[in-house]
Image (cartoon, rainbow over all chains, first blue to last red; front, side, top):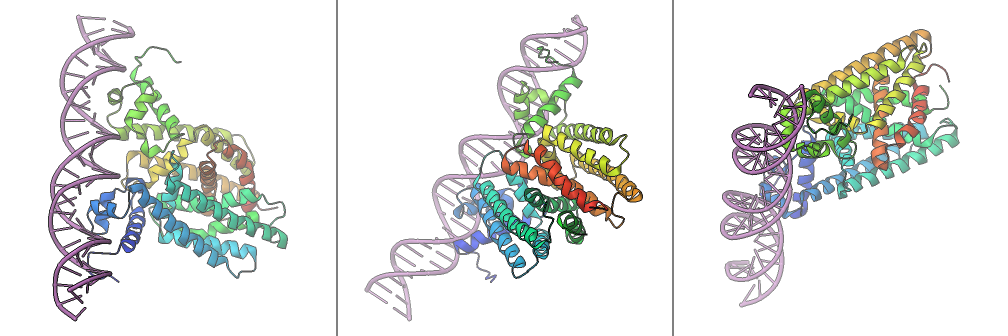
Length: 202
Length: 202
DNA sequence: TAGAAGATAGTAATTAATTGCTATCTTATT
DNA sequence: AATAAGATAGCAATTAATTACTATCTTCTA
């Protein structure tokens, strides 16, 4: 890779663009990322971006597709082959946290996208991502109840909400502290409380 | 209120402005609220706003001051006189949730402000608000450990992070569902899991 | 296989629209 | 009448998108 030719095939250029946005979102407010900033970060002129995307909105959609694909794939693989539902949930949690620590702009972009009044393609993508995420959680929770690892009286929806909220809380703390690595350090400690909250035994 | 006179004293006009922003943030992306939209929502011309605020940044600072003042006051009063630390925490939680349900734009503005790269006055205000919020939590947690209501092995910081994250998760769910009232309905269910997570007994 | 022809990708400059802010004039209140 | 508050109109800067032109790569034919 890194052929020093400035000309890249369209699909590669699109991939580089997505990566550029995700990198930028790690260090600045996602809603303030301009097409000029994106282009500059990838050593391209602003106008050239529109050779590969019809609009800025389309860029954001591509970014969210990238996120949804990668995140779901990674959490699926992390839980695979783990017999205990609780252990699988912890693996999912840690993998998600690792993903977020690698790409701190991602959760902030997602939250920002959800805020939009209009139902943009990117927002719809975030919605289906979280929906699919929730399906994974519900399956594990049900399995956990059946195996007795999770409290039989557990409220499934609330447990799923709190699972995701826990990560959101970690993101918020890292924003407060201005320290991304804090997420990795705090994640196991916070999950331990969550685990006690949903588990059947102490 | 609602004196139909168009001329308002400066302090009242500032108060109305803050309320307008908070209302708008409840139904649209806070980062996309323009001074023109604020003015329109309060039946004023855009330029007139700058008679009362030196800059847009100053408006946001005023909003955050309003939020910090009200929120801290309400959670303080809600916990006052409650002997049990756990019960006090629940009261705080429910009061906070009620505040958020009344002003759904508030948590989204706060999160959005934390994302900014620059340290704006509004961002600084959010930081101190959350810091003070954390102090309240730490006190209650310590008291809860002493009284035996909370697990002695509980990780204070993690418990505080999760407390706020829990609310953030509820906000996210309401954004997904496009239904603010959902927050009120889900809050007790989610808190119950949190309570199990930090409590000493089942 | 050489090279013309076409397709693809990039540049630089420009445009239309938006936005925060200001200067000037008008109206209302006390 | 004096002053505070608001309306109107406009400026300067920013931003997404477009356009005319150029550079580079690919493919097909002689």
